[in-house]
Length: 475
Image 1: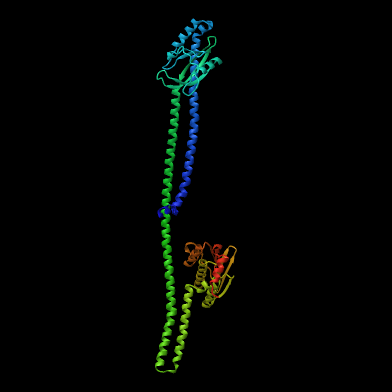
Image 2: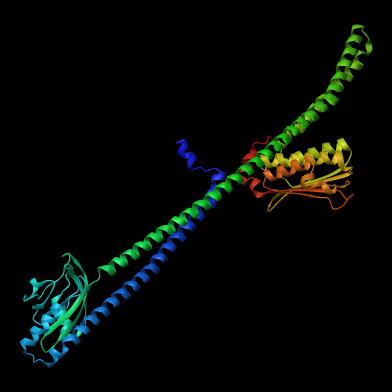
């Protein structure tokens, strides 16, 4: 089941390959079908034209045969009376002798349907064939007599070949001797025409199949190129992604080491020194107590005071790592506390303005905006040489915006792009994770820096979520 599930959940590279190959295969298949239909239709028209041309040539040949035969004995028929039996026998003898090729012959039927001349099938002579039909049900003798009565014309039907005895398609041309009530004609088998047409159709089908083969080979080559290119791009992108991941991992490790170094320095320079002072004061007080010195209370009080400073320092470091007020009261009070601590620590004047946010932002957005403000204030303290900082946090119809502005010396021209500092890159990456907007503006040297972060509405909690989150806040 897991394997089947994996098949229906393609990877990004597989999706990209499908997007590239499916339209190509569909387009090629449509082109192939269209080419096949058009080729077959055009070939069919050409084959029909060829068949018609060959049959018309056969018909012209038959008409010429009959005309020549009639001209050959017309002097007998033209001078004979309608009941001249001797003239009839003489003409019938001449027609019986007029055979040509391996299958050609002349035939004669009277208007009653009796066969009078059939040199290649003599067993049919003097028999009445009225009502004779071929295997397809086409009337033969009756239609020949009808054509003769109307003057002359062509008729097509199946007839046994004298050489094989098997039925084959035959075309006949019939004319009449009206005074004798004769239907005289000759026919030719057109199986050679049909064979030529069938061969042409087979050739067309072979060419269509060959075209399909060529299209398939071209499609396969195109798919191979797409697959190879996709694999190359995929490998290249994966290598770039691995390189970026390694770089990001290294940056994370560097940030962790930097944070650990900062905490270690604060512990060593702050709490460690305070605790050493407490230990020294307590040790001094112990020695004075051993001597029953009445001034032993002074170093003890100093130690208690120093211990209180150490406790405050521990709270400050803990607040920097994860401010409890951010979870308890929300982003606004946490930023206000951060700004106040910054003012007390640096001596810069600060101006903090906000609307009542409480816990309207989700946890991810709150911590991200708090860290961005924390990083920005750290940069201002270290590099800006500013005297005033303004922080503004408020919501609007598009989401929420945090704006931090100082009056320091501004940023150098290389503050964006590849030369962007680690702090600014961290801010930008946090904003990108929120799908928000990040802007850094330093109009000109000496006019300060503006950092503006916008968070989309998707990170604002609904009223129900806001109410539930508010109920968690202690009274």
